[in-house]
Amino acid sequence: MVPVETLKKLDIFDGLSEDELNAVKWIAEVEDYPKGSKIFKENEEARKLYILQEGRVAIQFEVGRHLEEVVHTVSSGQAFGWSALVVPYQFTASARCMAESKVITIDREGIRRLFEEDCHIGFIIMEKLAELISERLRETRLQLLNLVHG
View 1 (cartoon, rainbow, N blue to C red):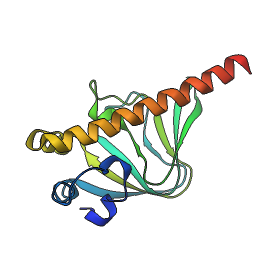
View 2 (view 1 turned 90 degrees about the horizontal axis):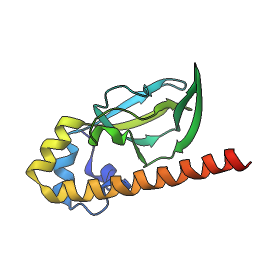
View 3 (view 1 turned 135 degrees about the vertical axis):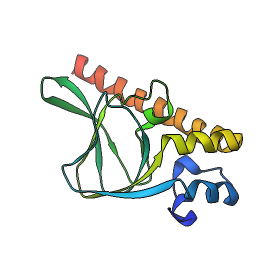
């Protein structure tokens, strides 16, 4: 369980009421990862949504055999691993800790049940998730243009 006061500080939950945050806290947990560890790998089944509480996490794409390119660095308070809420529930990138990191995790099945019980929670979180995906797509596009045009 993650305290409501912690959840209030996270962008993905901005717009949820105190009661709604109280429902979320029961499905949220904290996991610790050492520097250099992989939180998840590209193409794995996505079973959790992640929110960085402390540390630094790199989002990486595989660009060749045993080669990965960082496409985004996650900052404290930001969500990642959004594939857990989007069919086909498969990670589109890998996440590696660039520093010792504390991560809030939310199980896919738990949050989907919560969405079914309270549509407003689902609407707010999915709206924030759409913003996040759009931002990451813009960043990736700019990196690709920079790569192509130097």
